[in-house]
Image 1: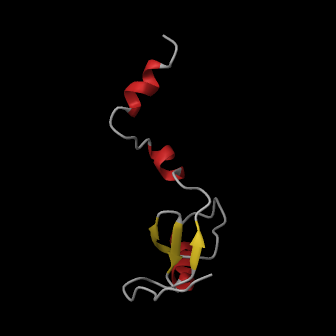
Image 2 (image 1 turned 90 degrees about the horizontal axis):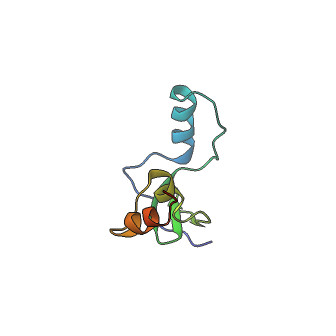
Length: 80
């Protein structure tokens, strides 16, 4: 795992988790890391640790972000 310098304007993972515990309803447990940036399938936490994103496109699917024309093609395949 490569390390990259942590961004100074971000909170550390432990600071983020502490705030999360104070202000977020504990419906789900949180993985103890604060992701701050990504490039392709590589993501980094606030301490500079690099991870491989094994869910690329997950948020785009959840948020329905599509390329121009994709929605039209998708709708054309739906039954009337």
